[in-house]
Image (cartoon, rainbow, N blue to C red; front, side, top):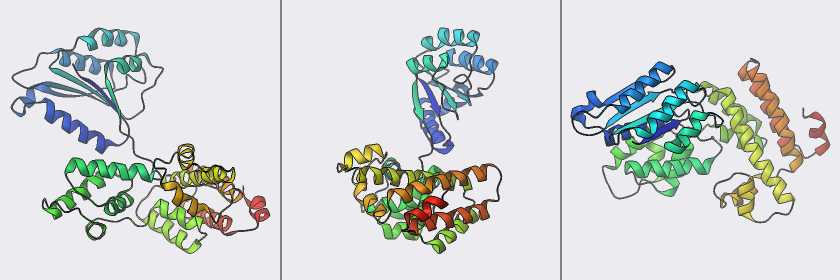
Length: 338
């Protein structure tokens, strides 16, 4: 009686895992009889799913009942909770019940607590764009799953190219898989740069341009990102995350911390080896400069959420950020930052 609870906003990654479940559980010859996909936003639909899950399998293989967009982990009546307590522990061994939702399950909800005991929970949320280590790890794992061999440099380039877009990663790896033709030789970064749609203009490169005070490059990147329909608030979220990481590392270094593992843990950097390079990135900047960027970034976020015109608003704030990072006069950017 396997029970699964999948949640998160990465629809593509979640659907890929659901496809695997279907292939593992269902006999293709009995697919129409043993597979049920039911919307889970109404109590009567949830009851129907439970009834289907209790039904013995027809023919061979197993039965899979998918309760899509299920709401019970947000709100669940006492009547429905009682039904869940009665049914879930007694599901037939041949039945698999899958519940999926976009929102994170509410830990205070009694149905969530029940599922935490009985079900396998998996999160499918997009990786934050500034968590480059996690993006590289995901490329490595997906490439291994698909049987695509990549060099370390090719893996890094592919992670930079697709960011946290799981669908694009899968499509690009399929392309590389076809190109390799099953060759045991790993694909290098030269091939990736030729075959993959490399998004060289991304929000992390925008953060790097701001950090060096390169206004012209920063404005060019902003224009390109918006032209490619990158959501302005997503751009700002990436900038905030990156500058917070730089600030945390700067403060720890200034405090005398020398252990890269301790710095990595405090700054939420997955790979301690990256701290060496991050130290070099922030070397020209002092803590006051990095501190001055955050109120300005937060003000930019508020302006966009209030409906300000994205291009002009981003331009203005990014020019101010570049000025902060160029400045060596501490008093100047202290008094002019919001």
